[in-house]
Image 1 (tube, each protein chain N blue to C red):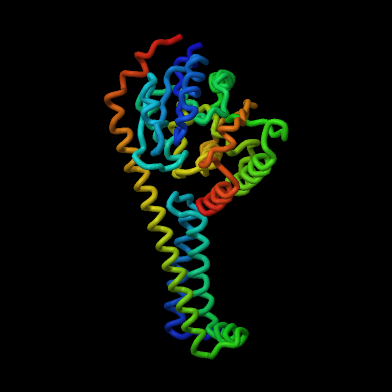
Image 2: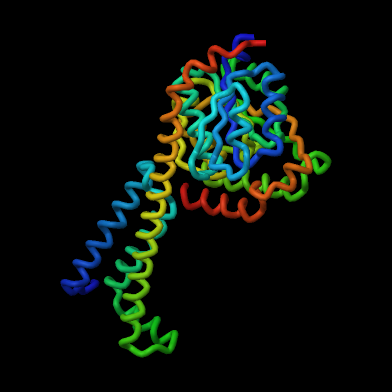
Length: 225
Length: 125
C-alpha cells in the first residue's frame, strides 16, 4: 500500500522510557518505518532509548508541551515532503493497527481522519468520559464544530491539511485548536473509531491529562478563542 | 441632553477608540487578538467610558459600599491600574512562551539536516 510506506508517524514523547521501545516496535511491526519522534525535554532515558532505533529523533531542550512537540514533528515531516502525517501518543494507548483504516480515509479524499475513542465505561474510565464530554462541549461552544472526540491525539492529516493547519497552542489545548483549524479552512474530515488501551502504565502516568490539567486546558481554550 | 466637560469628551473618545480597535481586531480574526484580550479591553475601556460619561456613578457606588467621596476615585484608579498591569503581564507572558517554543523548535529542527537522508533509506517490510 503506497500510503503505508509514505506516511510519517509523529510521536511527541515526554518521559516514556518505560514503554517507548515497545511503542516503536509495534509501529514498525505494523509496517510504518518513517517515524519522527520528538523528545519533549524528557528528564529520563527516553532520548537515548529513541536513538537506539532507526528513526528521526528530534529533541526539545526543554519541555514545551504536546502541541509544541507535534508542531515540531509536523514541520520536520514537511521538510521531507510528507504526503500524509499520522500523529499518535507515545504511551502505548493507541493501536498502530488502526492507522491503516485512517490512512484509507485520507486516500479516499478526506483531509483529516480523527481517531475517536469508544466512550463506554467498560473501555474508558468514567472520569475520562466526563472530561472528554466537557472538552467536546467547550470545543463546540468556542470553535463551533462538534466532534465526538476533540481530545484524541490519534489523527491522520493529508498534505493539504498539514500545509493549512497553523496552530499556536503548546499544550493539550492543541487538539482542540486543530478542530478550529479544520473549521476555519473548511477541511473535509471524518471520525474513525479507534481502539484505546488503558494500561496500568498509562493510568499511573504523572504527566497525563488529568482533571486539573483538563480544567487548565478548558480555561486556555476560552482565553485563546 | 448629556452635558459633557472637556475631560469627559477626551476620556470617552479615547476609550471608544481602544474599544473599537479591540473589537475590529477580534472580529477580523487576527491571531494576536484573543477572546481574553477582548474581554480585558471591554472591562478596562468600557469602565473608563461609562465612568467618564456618568461620573456620578462613582458617587453612587461609593455610597453603596459606604466609602467616602474621595476614596472612590482612588479605588477606581487603582482598579484600572491593576487591570492594565495584568493585561500587559499576560500579553508579555504569552509572547515569551511563544518565543521560547519557537527557539526550542528551531534548535530541534536545526539538527534535521544531518538526518534528512535517513528515513528514505530505511528498509521497507
